[in-house]
Image (cartoon, rainbow, N blue to C red; front, top):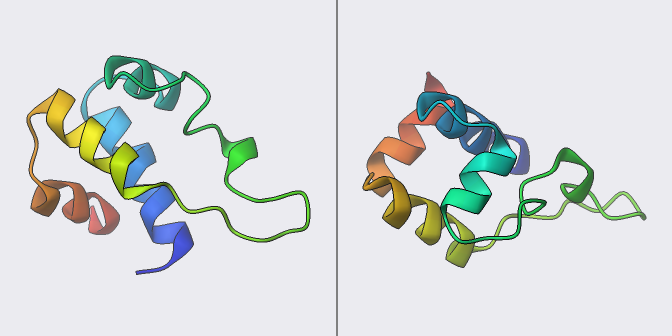
Length: 75
């Protein structure tokens, strides 16, 4: 899995749950800007990966499994 794959899965996961990325973050108890596209790369061009804690929170809030999250990469 690549950096782009993980962020694509978050984008698709939000759509799957009829939310924006910001809405998914808020619904999961995270800051609304957690999944903003502007936060996916550092100012030096280095990739920023979402934390496992953030992914865990969106799974818990939506009642989804990690397997279903990973499937969003390939949908």
